[in-house]
Structure formats: C-alpha cells, structure tokens
Length: 616
Image 1 (cartoon, helix red, strand yellow):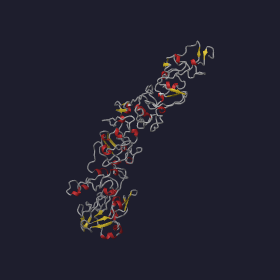
Image 2: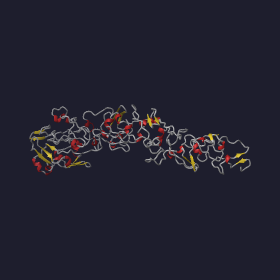
Image 3: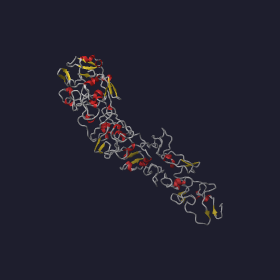
Image 4: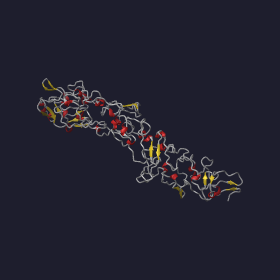
C-alpha cells in the first residue's frame, strides 16, 4: 500500500531490490505524473556513465571502472544475472523480474553462502584451475581488495609459498600433469609492482591499476603481452602451451650486435648466468678474466681461480645493484663506492660508477670496439697502501707485451713503479744508484774470494749469484712463495742479460716468472709466505764472527772459508725460522738479517753494512 494519495511508497516493485522485506529502498512514484525514468536507473541505478550508477551494496565496485581502478572495464548485469537480463538495459524474462528473488547466475557468477561470494573466478588465483578466495559479505562496502588479495593470497602448497610483495601470484611452483602449478613469479621476475606490466602490458599499466577499459582482466586467460620497451622490439612472445618465452630481451645475452636469446620454461628450474650469457660465447677479454666460471648469482664478487685460470666475479666490473640487470644497457662500474662492493672492488681508485668515459670511472673507450680500464686494483702494484694503478691493454684483443710482471709491479728489481722502498735499495752494495734491494741475492757483488779478487755472478762454485748450491737468489719467490715459485724472470731488464732462451749456459736460460697459485694473486692481500729453504750465502763471514752468539746461532760454515764451493748456510729453513708480523710489518729471527728484527719500512731503501752487521 502507498503512504499518500496518488503516490506509491515503500513498495518492492519500485525498489532497488536490495532487500525483499520492508522497509524498501524505493523510488517514489506519483500516479499520473511524469513518465518513470527509462531503463534501470529509476529503481536500481545504471551502468558506468549513466546519470545514476547502481550503488546498492558492492554493485558500483563491480560495474564502474572509473570508481574502481582495479576493474579495467565494467562488469555487465548479464554476467551475474543471465536468467533475468540479456544486457544492461534489457529484461530477458519478466517472470524473473520483481519476483523477490535474486536470480544469481551467469558466466561470472559463482555460489553464495550467507551473502558471500565463493567459487567465483573473478576472485581467484587466476590459474587455469583456480584457487578461489573467500570474500567479505556483499553488504560490506568498506572493505577493498588489492592485487595480492586474489593473486598473492596463497597460504599453502606442497612445499610452502613465498610472501607476495606486490600482488604477484605466489602459489607454489611444482610440476603437474596439467601444468597448472608452474609459477616463476618470484623476485627474479618481480622486483617491483611495475614489473607486472613488463609481461602483462595489455592488462596493467603499472602493476597497481589496470589499463583503463581493458577487457583482459578476469577473462580466464593469462594475456601475456610484452612491453617492448623492456622486453625488446624483436617480437617477444610467450607460448602458453609450451610455457616458453622467445625473443625476449630479458633472456638474451644482452649484446647490441649478435644478440642471442634463451627460451626458458615458465616454472622451470632456476637458471644460472650461463643460460643467457654462455661463458664460451662472451667476447673481449672475458676468457682471461672469467676462465670458464659460471657465476651463481648476480652480485658475484672476488677472485675464484682454478688451476691456471683467473675467475673474477662479474660484479668486479659490473654494477652490484641488480636494478642494472636487463635494463637495455651493458653497464660497467669499477667504483669502489658501489653498495656492497666486494673486497677487491673497494681497493679500486675509481669513484664513479656511471660507466664509460665518465669522470672518475676508470673506464675509457667505446663499447664493442675499444675499452681500457684504469684505477682498478686487479691491475695495480698490489701494495697494502699507496696503490699505483696500471693502464690495461685494450679489452678487445690487447695484451701486455714483454715483461708482464713489470706492467703492474715494476718487477724485480723495481725501478719503474713507485711503492714500498724496501723492495729495492738506492745504495745496495755494488749497485749504487740502481734499484736492487731485496732482489738478486745477499752480497750479489763485492764478495771477495781473496784479497783483490771478487766472487762474480755465474754458475761456478765460486759464484756469488746464480748457483742455488752456493748462493740463494733472493727474488719474489723467497718471500711470496705461495704466489710465485720461479726464482727469476727472464723477461726482466736486468735478469735477461744472462737469463734468456738460447743462452749457451743452459742453467741460465728460459725461466720466466709465473704465478703458481692464482688464489694468492690479486686477492686483495699481501701474502707473505717464505720459501722452505735454508738460505745460503757466499758472504762468508770471517771465522772470528762465529764466536759472536748472534751469528753462530744463525749460520753454519760449509766447505771451508773463501774456497770454491764454500758457503755459509742458515741453520733453519726460512719458513720455520722466520716470523712475519703483518700488523707491524716486521721480520724477526730471519737468517738474512742475522736474526735481527727488521721493519719492512726501515731505512727508506738504504741498506748499509751495519744494517745487518751490528757487531762491526
């Protein structure tokens, strides 16, 4: 019954249908007055764009994409009320209209329990065989849902489920006959919400809201449409049957020319760097620096040599931050300031990680043509302080010529690279004005076998240098024996005057320096390890010297005094008798210094007789 003359009020026939018992949310109708509003807007409200959008309960969130950015396009009435209407403005069966029953059926309709939707694809994981989500009651208009409410809401699986950060599907990845559970929506693919649009560019524009007007959401399809700005312009595609990507930049070797693509399977086993960047196919000097190593993760640092091969982690030369990965560029950074830079990288002189030709980057040249590095620890003199950096050969085919050790260290004797003065001596006996110092031997010259006669260098029993049986050559291998074991370097400007291939004296020929253990070379440390040898000297202290406790406790006489083959030898091998303190840089109990403690930085490169012979 109406409540006033000529007007119908509180009558279900002219209500929004939200409730079947009074009081009704009705439309006041005056008998004989103006025509009733056409369409559905008079009682229910209409679709998006109408003057009165339906707003009862949660209708507006489902029909009005301008109101709900997670909708894309409005859901038509027929999607959930197919037995009643055939369109937004057309009643298909008037017997089902105004019958006090909500005829809920259609392609998007699920089931209702206690006013709550369930088993509705629109609110599911989105898989081919979806996992349905539990919604709040239809009357709850305050609750809103984001992407993770449906896609990232999985809480159980055969082996656990990762936490969805941006709404990426987090159901567990495992193999099944229907491939329904293949899932690679992990941090390798989704590092930010915006990454969703890389593979679903037709559905979402930023991973937060849908593309306005899109019909690709909740349509039972995966709708993989690549954003070519990220995935590349070579027609990237995804085959939903084989679950494989093709021609996608993200799975390419990254090269500007000669680009090759991998075809990984969605949900497949984890891929290492070699899957996209085959080590054997890397150009330039990668072979020398990587040595066949397959890195296990992006920010791989350090030097991990095996046998004769150096194996530098990629992050020594490329940025540490994975945001630079698959960004369309070959990014280079030698900057010691890179976040989480490894031990080697922090010793670089480069301070700018902006790449080639930027000030302070240590990188010059043109990608793919000619690139050189500077200010990089791997090509430095290796000192703990006062590092001096060498310019490298061209990455594309260059190499160090001649004495390769000298390119970085200055070699033995050191005369070109500034550094620790104790590696050489400006007044080494017999070598005044020539760099010598710890190299060549103890009294390599000016050793007298008789008044007015010197014991010269050579291989005879009276030689002061060159014959290991009578005089120990002091070179890099004596104090860095874990790194270098060769006693000399025939490429060196001084050594090669006698030691070279083809020298008639066989013992003097062909002995180039070589790194014995690459894990001890370019590892960020100054590795001091003494050779297990009892030092032999042709200095032959006078017999009276052996009455001095310091000398007699260190040396012993062999073969007489000042005769061919005679020498003095240490009573203990260097590796057992010597103590090296890396903190104070002090040697103690070492035969070379007659058992005295000597600091590495003492004397500033000037050694005199009293430096070792304190009893003179």
